[in-house]
Length: 275
Image 1 (cartoon, rainbow, N blue to C red):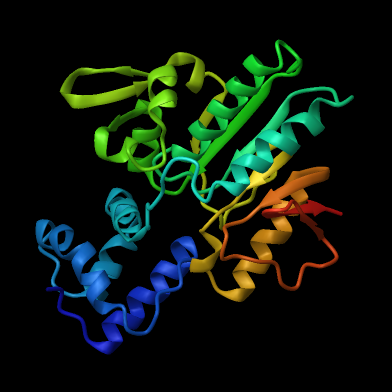
Image 2: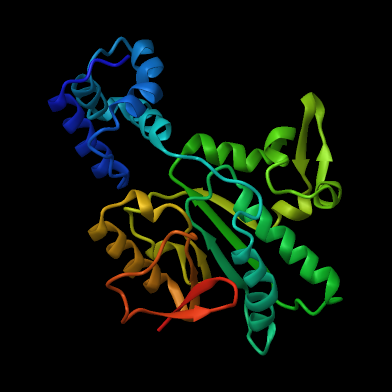
């Protein structure tokens, strides 16, 4: 167990919120201990305040990344919650192809181990095959995450049977994956072709990423303070093209940004259109 006085824990809470926006509850000491005890033992660090002092040094950037990585929740599955992906395939893809020009750009924020962008890529390929070439414009998927280790896994595109069993049908497994050594399956080149993976902290500017038609930012804002959530939603709005869409998690909603987005009922499911 990590030695943690109330003061030590508060120092770490402040660090984590400043570093990546995650707002820890007041009674999450056990969670912190379970995720950091091994890492701290490896670096001979006893207390959370000593850890924060260590990672505040410029020379310890790698240790800082490891700490943030360990504290990031990377829970995901294929076609999570179903409705957003049905909306993407049945409404957003057809709508974009109706008289619009240029690349259809999608941003998957906090993409974790890659299931969300790869799921969207599967739907794009299925739509292309079903509509016999009606998908005239290229599709670009920008997938970002705070965690360097998660992004490495995304780029590798290899998944074991356990993770593949969480939401992926046998038909899609056969069509979009090749069996590799060691009991894992690797995504086919056609699936990874439209996806660009890159590191992105949601506290940083989005200006260099260009404009998007759709932003998936699901199941991540729940970890932030109300003020930071509001700031991120406003900056996402600035990254959307006029009339572009924001897709949130099932338990997430908008508050304080009614001048930026309008709710769109999709029966079932809800998305938000940039005003």
